[in-house]
Length: 412
Image 1 (cartoon, helix red, strand yellow):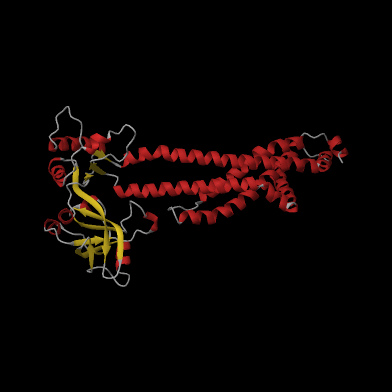
Image 2 (tube, rainbow, N blue to C red):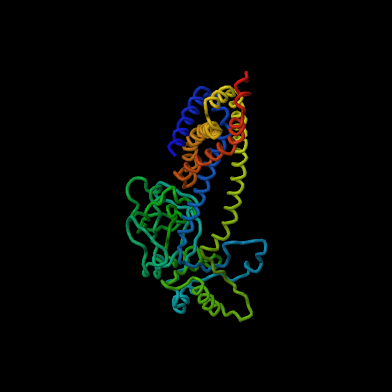
């Protein structure tokens, strides 16, 4: 073991001297490796970003929340659009029926939404998401407020013009001072801001973000915008200790009774949950990952061939040195390790440059997606460099190791 460590250390020293004396050649040789490593780290960062963004969006739905809606979340070529289009819309009475008759359901609430322009005395926000929610909405979904309170049953039943706004809307409508207690105009109607949601920030921009959402009582929404032609979502939180599959079966039975469906009739509603989206997104993630791996592998293959080519040149240039080392007792294994280490060192140079370029690239990606370059990806990149160095350096190292000492000494 000591002898191996000594030989390995000596081989590393010789390899570093060789690479340092041919710096430009080493960098040019590793261009393919550099491109490959940047591709690997970039792809991993993008995949992490997609994964994190998707998980954040999914998390906002709730792990134990089931959604009863007119349309399925995932629609394929076999989806019967005309049948679903003719389905009757959901109503808040279905949430009430589930609360009264489904023992596995802890709480059900009705939610409906639209897009409208918001105005304060000085500012305007176009196409903000307006959500009409029942007073028990916080019992189904977590609601974090930085100021004020969420509207109660009295506010909902009285159809009061009160609103709970996202942090982004509060900041834009009232950039100086707090928006709490102030008024905003929604489609000509004036509302009092009674609550401000905690800021989620850029990491959760998109469907999961509440920063640009306004929540008003369901009956207020119904009175101003109407719900007859809108897709109402019935959102049910399943009680602790109950399986989602069992709860879905019970809910389906209750809803079929409410809809007065015959035993032979198909459901005229859809029961959606998290796993539906997970199953739909998995093939897309696999396809993106496969394409990324293919492109990355091609770059690394080109880089590996470049390393192999330059190592054959190096072996030719140092044939006489190999002969001298063999003449004084160097074994084949020692010569082989020396050139393998040199190939790995050249690849590691490419890896260092590639990872160095990957950090600013990850910052650019992070500005768009909730992603960052983690240490696992960095270690994976260097592991790939070692693997390429060994695989593509093996043939040149073997040719050096098996060179006859007499012929090597005669080489000019």
